[in-house]
Image 1 (cartoon, one colour):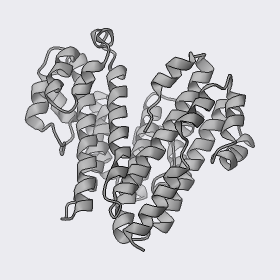
Image 2: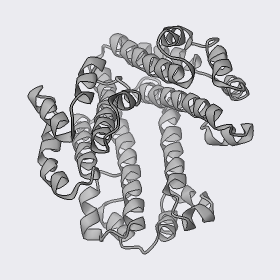
Image 3: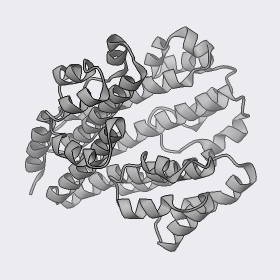
Image 4: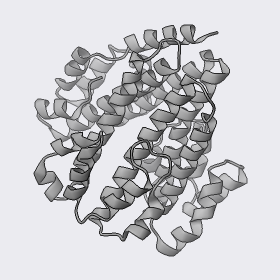
Length: 349
């Protein structure tokens, strides 16, 4: 087992991802049923057959996508048995654990039904479906955290420490920030050693931290939160934006000013966000561009050294993007979006 073998497997798997022509064929389908029929011509066929035994329409597509992603990541973990590769894969998988716990906590905080919460989780990380299902059954955020602690799952530690602040202020962002800080600190510590592979993963993680912090800054400036208070929601370890730079952004009077200040960084592409969206404080438009940036940066890793972790990083992001694109197409089928508008929503890598 070596990086050359892993790279060859990754490139083989990447070649089976949906190309632009196939995505266009999906976009042109008139309704969810015809979309499912077209998807059955792809690698998602078996997952859709299983899904149709339980659901119909969009829920069947969502279930198939979740199942396929879990199966794909488990397959990679099984053949990439090189110790170094295993460590990097688990860093990526842990992000799904964090995202799933966030989803459960949010749902419990706003009293969403268990079925609705379950439809949004993707058991692609270390926490399997049975574990996540039991967490979903808990009555409130406190019970979710207590169960994590009972099971000695590491995410309980930051959540338990942050819970008194959450109980006092009621903002779920307190718990989400605690999870983000824990995840990124743990991931960066795992790749703290020398070597080009560690350096590449640190760079990827640091870029993600920048994006997390920019999103936080945008919300805090929009909501006119004092910089000293907003700082509690920032994550250490960014690549281009240190604490000083972030404090300067938090002190700005408007979202437009934040975007203008970022023109001096590699996030200058945010200047292309329509001015009317910025004036209307539509942070979602800016967040969409940040997400596209992360996807293109991550998937672009395929251009890196073929005898390194680069192909793993590239594939994970490319696969994530494929699933995201299919979900966008599926949701647009229920909203009667024009074809050109759907194409604009997708990210091609």
